[in-house]
Every structure is written in structure tokens, then in C-alpha cells.
Length: 230
Length: 160
Ligand code: SF4
Ligand code: SF4
Image 1: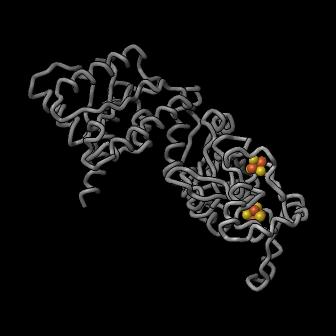
Image 2 (image 1 turned 90 degrees about the horizontal axis):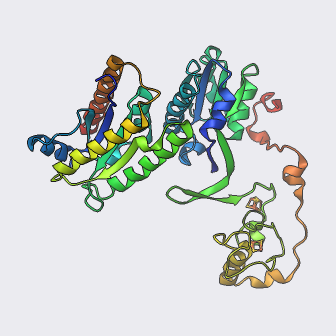
């Protein structure tokens, strides 16, 4: 799941203060689950922004709220399309993909991010999420006993550990488990430690961000022409 | 009563609401600035309800739940405490004094303590001054009535 958290109120105020009518748009998917941008958080932010703007003597900026099922899919944005002409700015409580999907759909309307998109991760315990995958486009979990060295080793080492590991913790932060300790322990449990006797060759980063924005195409699922959309 | 602060007290049915009732039966004096709203449990209180009260212009909010360990629903009051804390953080970001809201714990037998809590919060809010978001006197009473109506509707929905 994509995990995000809310930007601070003063930062959001700063983005929207020069507009008259602002629509806050929540997203009903990942960011609802991580309690950052669903309907309830939109309600909280709406209330908070209206108060903060009034306290800055900008009470004439109106802030309305709505939440759609998925901001990253054009079909769901259709529901918004009729409302958007009434507004001169949108503040999205979706992940960065949602913000950009709205911006593509409404070229004349400024769209501001209300969230800081963080990472792909999992729910560790109620209210706590942790990063697990960096989306490198060439998954190597099979070689590392199912623990990602790119995401979970602070130095992204493929032939770790680095030497800074102490009592199973990473030197970067005492609360952070050493990714390589985790890999080692799990591999030992699986009886596959011998695979770390070979040097792991460098990663092909062209499948990651270094290759520019990526695209996934499933031709069997494509409907003619629609596939060419940017 | 134009310059008097107006405080909304979200009270749990099992403790603070009964304590407020007891304070009345005991003929205890406490400031008339507190409007009491009954909840089935303080954990019914979401951050947006507390913010909505401030948005409508109340000067202060009391959240009053059972003694810790004494919640009718086991840990509703502990959850409420975290939400009150989050509301305080939000108020600070918004630019309102976080001291305008506080959570208290008391039992249904503590009528005297309810009166004390009311007095403490009224004194504190008087020191802070009226909320800069507060509308005129008629409006604020109407707004508080509206919050009450919404809370009633919420409770009715719960019973269904
Ligand atoms: S190897 Fe790449 S795809 Fe696999 S978990 Fe790590 S970052 Fe994600
Ligand atoms: S201590 Fe472990 S996780 Fe931290 S940088 Fe070194 S190998 Fe990576």
C-alpha cells in the first residue's frame, strides 16, 4: 500500500491562500487505509483550514470537501468533473499519483498536494506503517531470503552488512533493524546462508527511476488506442 | 453574558454526565458557561467533532470520561485521550491555543469534581480570552444548539 501523511496546516494555507474557492479532494483507497487522506481526514483538514484561514484574516477563502474512490483513475475523476468549474483551486489528499492525475485532467486548475507521499509499505501495528519496497522494477527478493536490501538496508548494500551494524541494529538509527542482520537471520533459518558466499553483481538500475518514468503495458488487456494515452 | 466564554463539555453518559447531574442535585455552584453534551462514551468523539465545535466558535472544550481503567467499554477513554491530544496538536497548527481543550477523568460520584473542572476551564478560557473564531452571542448559542442536535441525531443513529 502507498503510505502518506498530512502536510502541516500552515504549509497548506500558504499554497491555497491566494484562491477564492478551494476544493479538498480525498481519495478512498490507499491513503484512506493509512488514515492520511480519506473522507474523515478531509473533514478534519477542511475544518482546520477554514479556522486557520479565518485566523489569518482570509476567511473569505471558502474550502469545500469531497472524496472520490480513486484519484489515480480517470473514470473516478468523472464524478468530480462537474464540480470542479465552481472552484479555482484543488487541494488533493491523494498520493502524488492522485495529485498528478487531477492535474492532468484539469489543466487550467491549480492542484496542490495536501499530503506528503512516503513509501510503499505495510501496517506494522495499529497506527504504525513501515517501508518495505522501493519499487526498483526488478525484484530481487528471491536472492535475499525475502527481505529487500534496497529498502531495508540504509546504505542499499547488495553485499552487506556494512560493518556499522551493532546488536542487530543499523548504525543510522538505534530503532532501525539492520537489514542485513534480518537477511542473515532469515537465510540461516531457511538453511540458505551459502548463497551469500558469492558476490552479488550490481543491480540494473535502468528499471528504477534512473531509466526515467516507467510504464507497465498489458497488451492483452488494452483497448485499442486508449493505450497510447500518456 | 456577552463577554462570558462559552464552553462545550462532551460528557460520557456513565460518569461525567451523571456527575454533572449530581452537581445539580447537590445544588453546587459552577459557572453557567458550560453546555453539557452527553455521549455514550468519550470514544464516540472523533477529532472532527472537536474541531467542529471550535469552528462554530466555542471558546473551550471539555472532554470528560470515566477514570482510567473504569471505562464501561474498557478503553474508550484511553482512545479519547489520544484523540484529544491530536486535536490539541491540530489547534496549535491552526493557530488557536491548545489549552482551550482538555480531557478530564472522573467518576459518576464526583459531582464536586465536575463543578471544579467547569470552574477551572472557565477561568482558563477567561484568561486566554474569547476565541477569535467566535460569532455574535445569538449565533454562538444557535451554533451550540446545532451541535447538540447533531449529537442527538448521532446517538439516535447508534440506537438503531
Ligand atoms: S528488490 Fe526492488 S521490487 Fe523487490 S522489494 Fe526491493 S525495491 Fe521492491
Ligand atoms: S547497519 Fe545494516 S542496515 Fe544499516 S547500513 Fe549497515 S548493513 Fe545496512
